[in-house]
Image 1 (cartoon, rainbow, N blue to C red):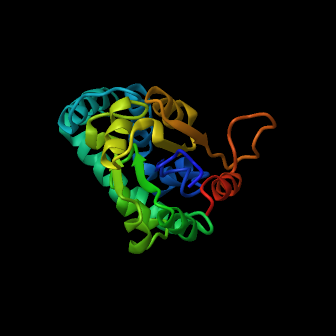
Image 2: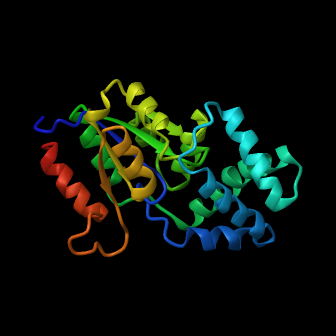
Length: 227
């Protein structure tokens, strides 16, 4: 293999599928929870990059901050969030979103080349959401590790989530390539750990910009890994 990259960490939302319009579709699915959905986005932005050490400590901080916006009892906030991701978000994904064209064949080629692969998402129920956008169990099984950052008690771009998944993939950070749609979370997390990063966009890539389309990335990967 010509490349020095031995493992790839994929973001999920906006990376393995195009999630254009998802905020609007989530609200339309549950308009009566519009203010809670908005509050969740506000709080997650506040918690971006913070590392609380454990899932329990992350939940406690989430509950405390959400309570100020939703006026729900502390622990009720995270219970609502879990239901929102597991049911509402999953239903929206099943109805309106599908994995990238040719994704399974592409991932299988990488696997045959000996590239270890993982998925790191900020939101929970990752495997369930992967199935919701049309992945089958065979494709899901090609990813060695599948994590939500909050399992580690943090949100991207916290370093520990990236380092933990690199360790789980049995590679050094510098041997990892992170593929994600956000430079401020996926990109910053990768750079903080000494990992390589490629940003994916579903908008027309800007001339001279750093972000590339999924098609441009796969074309590059075909050459880089001699697929």
